[in-house]
Length: 299
Length: 163
Image (cartoon, rainbow over all chains, first blue to last red):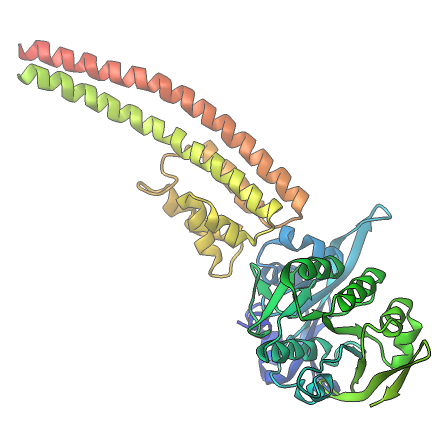
């Protein structure tokens, strides 16, 4: 059962009816204590329920979405989200308590369900640039602000490369790419894809490089220094990199030290900037190295 | 011949009565083992609760897991199976009221808090169940001697009457 269908059965009747009326175009459902349920649809449309949501209702909904297993989601919750079986992500906000180094989610005041919807074939256009001819595979970084389909696009790239005959290793730290259940992907990520689920990206990449001999390494939402090092190592080992990161432009990505090191160290050869609508490619940049300087030219 | 039958039959009746008392010990012992497995599956392997309960060996946990499959919490699932489990032939029919109280506390809070809290809850439940199990074993030993002796003596009296 998909995340929206599950939510319909958990929301108060008015909000459930509103969600049902919004049909298949729902991209996000935002739940806030004492305020109406907000249903977001593609291209900026939204609808609000008549009744405010009570705290008990939010707690009941979240408990059910977590399969009544708070302990199993604790690490994710402490990072401000948890992921459902179908890859949809529930972001949570509220009171954090901690000792200065480690923080714990104590009371949840609002939640945002971001609906995951695999779109088979959405990366076909981009793949013509990633693999322009037989034997050529360009390592690629997908950039966009949140909500423009980076994960969906990355998943479809992995699926198509995998089905096309390449061994793909997927570092799925937040369970969004493959939505694994007990280590087995529930979303179609390709015939030859191996997924390391729930493990920090850098460690997952290092382990899979050692053990799975991947031809392609896939990582979503990179940004840390460890990610950059792990990807550079994978590239040195001869694996092609398919990754995504938050950035609204190439310049913005270059201004972030860790992403800059990925861009300048020759880890990726192609940068695709997604937008303005989900799944669309706005700009495409190719690396053009010369005299020790990395330059990016529009493709 | 009739006298021998009376002695044997009566002794066996006493043995059956002592077995019924021993059954509580066996159920509690199995429950203690399952709680240990549940702790590993929950706080060590971070399995979802329904899955962790399903992997436990005893019928009681499996019934609660089955209830959770309908989409309710462990507390609700336990409440829905509690009465049928305590009925004659049910997986908890040999348990005493104090044993059931432990299960009420356990299932009432299972899955509702973080790893550490769940560990504390399971440890406390295990400790109590182990204590109850040891008590049940002691009582079973006493009952064993008492009921078998009583059965034998009753049989002997019947045999004397017959003779």
